[in-house]
Image (cartoon, rainbow, N blue to C red):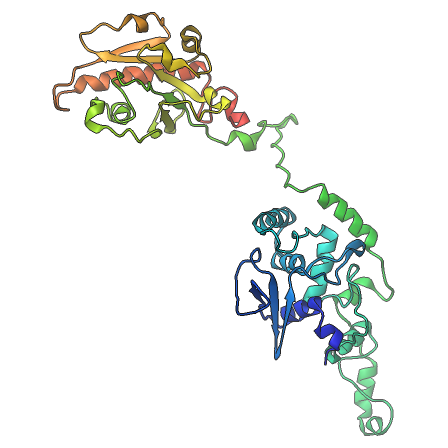
Length: 419
């Protein structure tokens, strides 16, 4: 039987629950019926060890006290739940739980350092009867089974108890006694590893703790070296991120191409007036297109008509700007001046066949491609010239991307920097 001090100890109950493989119950109050599955929302934990049901506050301190600072029960239980997690994953999980903890839940979850975690998990599993950071219970006795295990592990007793004094020894078979005397006392894995005298591993634990504290994030693998010893690819991990090119549309109501009809034009090669498929709630579209000189794989383009949500790095991804020549469109752009703007980005103007582009477009210079589509006559039949215009637009965009050094991963060195 366990001593009363052990029965009333939270850490002992946790260890006993683990050894008996009985899952404790989390609750939002002292009443175990207020069950919850969330460790963040729970305030109490109940251990169901046989006929005993002991409830403890998760904020209560335990006997696990590195540097004489007791660790609370929630942190110890959380460390056990993450017993199979790698150190970086355990650190991240601790941060996430602390973010979920409501105010008044009893402080934050403490992250155990590597050496502390090894010591705690070894004791909770029953692999150790004592721990470097676990304070002994005052007035606590070991169970009968624990006493037997300790005696066998230390070599003070064999696997079979034989009373060599009194009547029992007289009745025992002499040959059997000889066999017992010749037995090698194996003990447990702790005895085998540590030998016949205690060995202090605390210095090694401190070294390991220092190493793992400075390695809070997993290191990126080193680039593969060539035969000359230089890296084969610089920043290989980051270069694998594909960057989606952006096409900006004109927000002007006079533009022939809007969010409602741009996809049918660029994707299907058919012009349809915006008014027939008006979807003004759209503010972002995506389409795919293969540009052979850029990438053998299809590129995914993003189409938007506003830069209100643009980050500065997004301008490196812009590959075309559709315009009507109205300068108010460029307010808030990276280059508000049209001359500067279209020296950096290819421009596109789409007008009606048979009509001359407005002067506001022609004044923009050679940086803007001017194309014309047949006027809408009420149906999509017979609009075979639309596809020819679309191919001109895509060739214009592809040429501009090629000048900027685009690949399947981004413009110039952007693929390597993850822009």
